[in-house]
Length: 79
Image (cartoon, rainbow, N blue to C red; front, side, top):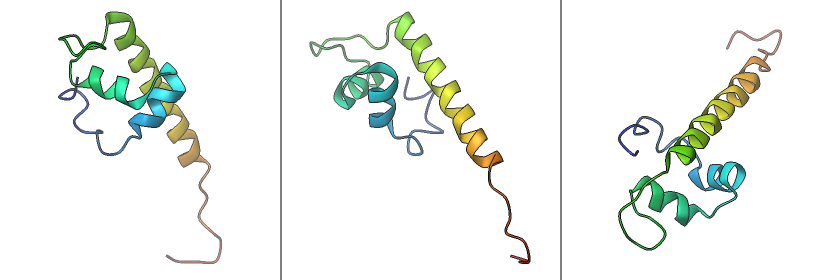
């Protein structure tokens, strides 16, 4: 999963995403990203969790786009 998300790894608050969209701790999320299950064994995101992550990223992208669309340049400046 880290390879797929490599372009945005440093730009996203994974702690916040984990809490908001999964109601889980950031350590749980980071273990999943590293392909580790809750018991320290092998196991990343389940298919359902992967779909949930996909939806969370789409929602976050839409929220960012709405925020960007709300930015208006101040009048009377050239900068």
